[in-house]
Structures are given as structure tokens and as C-alpha cells.
Image (cartoon, rainbow, N blue to C red; front, side, top):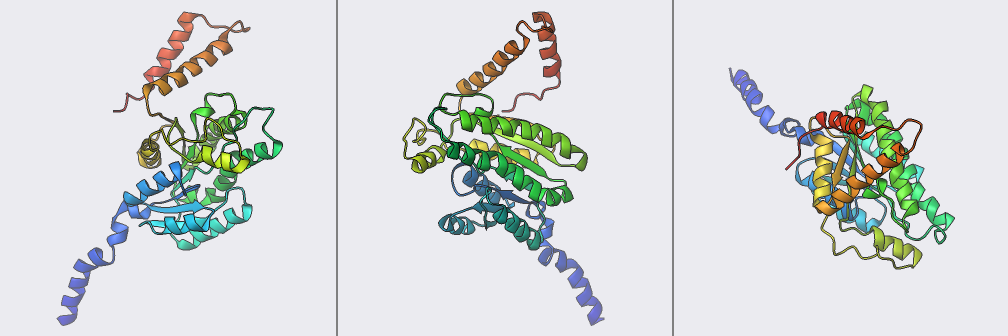
Length: 303
């Protein structure tokens, strides 16, 4: 009789005591964030961890790794996305942890600021290694884990992936590449149950300009970004892309309407250029019908 009572108590108590972690669906989903030491990557890491997700936070410097490791629900991972050995070691670390991997946020990146004439090939190569080869390398390395959980990939792009400003040719090229990478990868992985999105932030506070200045010694109009808003809205959009039921392909995240209008107008300008005086040129009525057809498939405006 005594054994029966104990067994009954274990059946009642065990789900509460031993199953607490597995009962929380958030705790079963882990996410790797690259470039998590500062700026957008740090904000994403802090938000996801605070909301109960387990975050592998990639960084290069020892001080940054220690600071990230001090955050609840975060495991710091040494990860330079330009270093194949670091990437392979990170795969091993996350695989051995046994949680699997549901989400990957390709955030790590650098900026090269300067005219085409002034940008050295070394700077150009660094930007491509970090901003293009890095996400490609990391995604390829972690794809088996992401496919196993039918997870999500979120690439952190930029308005520079849609626009192109003076003194940002290398950076803009790299972010345009992320737009194409997102679209191609989404089609490749959709049959495997993995969704892919890109976040396109506008002007938010970050150290990317300061880091470029420290690296090259040249101060520019992008060096001090302290006047801009903290990128909390970017972190919120990233969380939605990772976990909402039907993620969008693109999340335009800007601090004000002016930046949104500039971006949309640029897309319209490119549409006109594609349609202007070509062998196959559509008149206004046909273009408006195409726009109406596309809008009919669009989601309603978000609050």
C-alpha cells in the first residue's frame, strides 16, 4: 500500500518538479545570435533571453564573452564568422549541448566607409568576408540543426540593402547580397520546413561606424551614431520573425516615417527605371493593376 501511495505521489509531483523545463515551450527553443556583443545583436540577445528563450550569443572578445555569459538564459560562444575554425567549434559546442537549434540570427557585420577611390581592397575584402561570406558560412554549418527542428533563419540586413548612398559602396553591395541570399535561401529551405526572413533596419544607435573609424583611423559622418534611437524595435521585429506563426519575408524597421518613405520611393524609382523605354514597357493602367494585385495579397498594417 505504501509503495502504491508513493507511486501515486510521484505521478502527481513529477510533472511539476522534473518536467518544469520541458513544460515551457520557450525554454525548448534555442537561438544563435552572431555579433551579439553590442548594438543590434546585444539588444536581440537581451530581448530573447528576457522572454525565456535560450540564446547562444556569438562574440570574439574575451570581455564581451564574459559580459554575455552573465545574462540569464545566455551561453556565450566564441565566434568570429570570418573564421571557419570558430564556426566549426561553435557547431560542436551547440550540438553537444543537446538543445538543438531552432533559430539563427545572422547579425555580425562590419562597415567600410569611404569613397570608391579611397576604399582599399583590404577593406572591401573584410566587408565581404564578414557581411556576405560570414552569413553564408554560418548558415551552411548550422543548417542540419535548423532543418531538424524546422526552425527559422533571420538575416539582419539594412536599408543599405535597398538604397545605396555615397561613401558606402562596399557596405551597400554586401547588404544587397543579403537581400538576394534571403530570397534564394527561403526558396531552397521552404520544402524542408525552414522559414527565412530579413530585417531591414534604418538608422538606429550602434557601434558599426565607430568600429570602422577605429579600424581605419578616418572619422566620417557615420562615426558617432549616439543621436539615434536604441534598436529595441529591431529586436522586437527579429523576435516576431523567429516565432510568429507566419513570418514575413521582409521586416522594414525604421525610426520614423521619413525613412520608410525614402525606402519605398526608391523601390518605385527602380521600378520606373526597369520599365522606362524598354522592349517590354507597361503603361500606367497595367502597372496599377499589378500593384493592386500585389496589395491584395499583402498583410494589413501592423500597429
